[in-house]
Image (cartoon, rainbow, N blue to C red; front, top):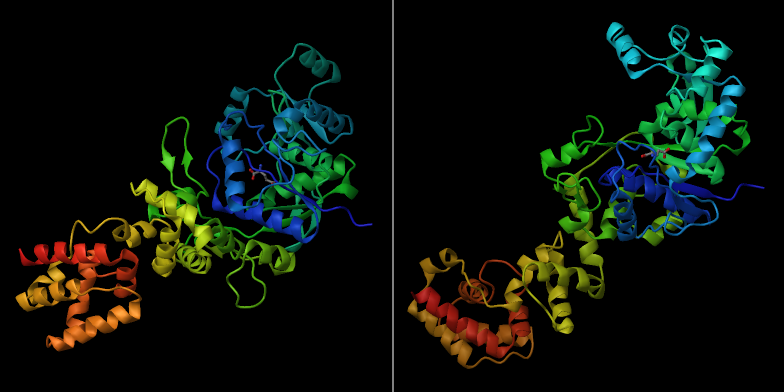
Length: 502
Ligand code: GLU
């Protein structure tokens, strides 16, 4: 019988969540959904130097915002815990020592100073096949020396003993057969001097303990796979090893190298899912959420970075992705990140989202701009009228401000040169007789009066728009007038005539 599908997203809680990390989480999630499996969040917090306490909660918030909530996680554990790597600390040493007694690992007592001296002497120094026999470790010391050092609690690490001249093969679901020459792999540390495992040991022990069936992770982990495969073998667990899928890199917009946070800072776009406030410096790095992206659009854009369904379709809801996702259609080649394309997704999602689902995010944007809206029916009508013009959520503020307060400034330059007393007279008469039952009737009345007064209606439309809106933008001007109502429209005409005349 096939193994039950269990996948994991295994971030290190060190800072902001890069969009590549969210895509890894998403592909794991989609694979789980497609296969009735379980999506696990495992927090890989064994690197005490890089650990940031607030990062775990932040990662959970990001996943929740994206709508890809894990089935099992530190705060919602299943029966495969602990879900924080550091909490499994006592069990790692046992496995590291098992590897030593089986001849696959060794104690290394070299001090930091000794290692630094070696690195100075040999700039490309690697602790491994060529050098291990010149170092202070249990391969070069006698058993009694090693026992004495251990008894004296001498600081030490445990290193894997990578075999010489072997070729390690594994099957990657995306890349097919992948092989490594072990003579190029160094003796990585498995257990650190503080007793914590390194990522390499922890990832294998945890994937085994949590019965992970498939591991989707970024291509940057491909070089580490050789160590992981060896460990699965050396620990005697090969038949339980997960199937690997190394996802293509997300590249800089110009295609040269992996997209980094620095690229976002340099080119003015977010790279993190949500705002990240560095607890040390207080610096805030902007995220997609706070830039005004809808989670549906963000997820949709990420899914298409390295995957497609084989057609030209670009817009997918999460539910649709859950049904259509397939590993076979993940590409090997890196995917270029394009912020303009990301915005295109958001624009499309705003256009196709039902007004009700936009209400809350738009309300929040308006509130941030000091506009408090209590009439939801009115707000919904406004949203419906302007949503096609909005790419990011803050655009709703600029596009709708005039519905909640009359303009405080006018685009005078667009009106003034052609403004005449006759035009003022037209608008006064129009306002006096104003009825606003529906946009089409209002427009006919406007045009009829214009003709009667000897104007081409076109010459009056722009001033009318600027009277109501303040600028040359917005939906149909009669639609705007209908929403504002007779009294407000009249008041705005009067206020604008004064401004245009002066
Ligand atoms: N902790 C690793 C990371 O931060 C996980 C890599 C893996 O999935 O094996 O991405």
